[in-house]
Image (spheres, rainbow, N blue to C red):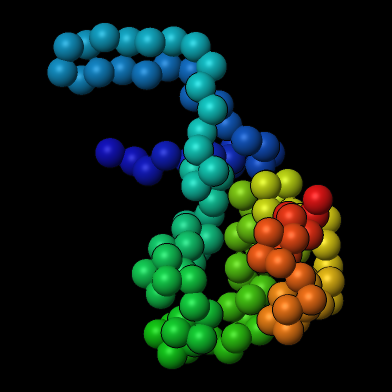
Length: 129
């Protein structure tokens, strides 16, 4: 069986699956099915992703394993992030910090530590309320 490709070899645009087939019962389903994010990757990007996962996302462990420098690995990770349709360095909406800065957070914790704030007030402030 040939591996699934996610990009057109002629123009490079994303391919779409239009037919699924069961070899066991010969059922066929036709429609428009999207490919997963990993199916959009080149074989090199997929190999990088597999190694990255095997190394638990630690580029310094990958350096020794694949013999490439940290900056090279970081560039390949950025390429992978872009190929999957994400923007490098952009926080996702769910990951956005609450409405306080790191400095404000530290000040709240310091004030809690010295007794200037109650624990309830500190929690309220840390949650951005």
